[in-house]
Every structure is written in structure tokens, then in C-alpha cells.
Image (cartoon, rainbow, N blue to C red; front, side, top):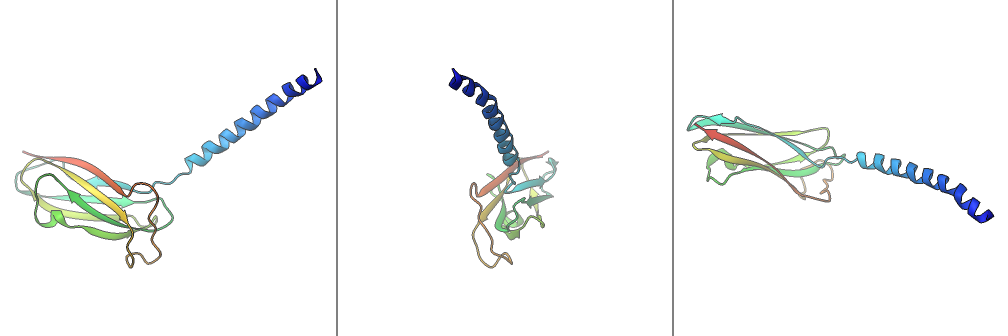
Length: 145
């Protein structure tokens, strides 16, 4: 009987301990940083054979720098500046902005693709390649009318 009373007294203490640990675990999960975020700016509509500007802003919340490569993709074959590929060092204190100016002659979907990879002599410090996905993309449509 005395042992049974001891078990009932320990129960609330254990529940309180588990509850506190659960709160601590949830707080740790909120402190995760985004590896990479992208913003794509471009018009939604344009006239045939009109030059448009596409701007891609890439940033990270990681403390370490990384080497990225940013490019545009489309199912429609394009020539000229559309095919430019930018390589840069991305650090948390220095978001990168990339620009493309090209003519569009038909309605299309444009994908901005950023690839994280390992390459020396791009960043002033040792660049890292984080665990997880290495490719990030964002798709936008432009209508030609």
C-alpha cells in the first residue's frame, strides 16, 4: 500500500517534467534557419517581342557562406541573355540580386533555379554545402498578348 502511494505522488512530478521537456523541444525547433529563400520579380503580361526584366533576389539565414549558381529555365527555346548563368558567394549579411533582360514572343513559364554546390575561390572564406536540398526553384508565368 505504501508503495502504491509513492507511485501516485511521483506521477504528477513526472508529468510536469515531461511537459517542461516538451516545451523546451518545441522552442529548439523554432530556431531553425532557412538555407535559402528566393524572390522573383517580373511582369505578368507583356506585348509580343517586348523586352522584359527578370530580377531574382537570393538570401540565406545561415551563418556560413555558400557558393550558388542562379539561372533561368523554360520549355520554350530562348537565346541570348536568358541563358546567362550567375555564380556567386551567398552570405547571411549579403543577399544577392541577379538581373536578366530579354525579349519574349509567346506566353511561357519561367523557372528561376538556384543550385548550391562546392567550388573553391568564389567565397573569401571557406564555403559550406549544407545538408538537405541543393536545388531551389520558383516558377512564374508571363502572358504575351
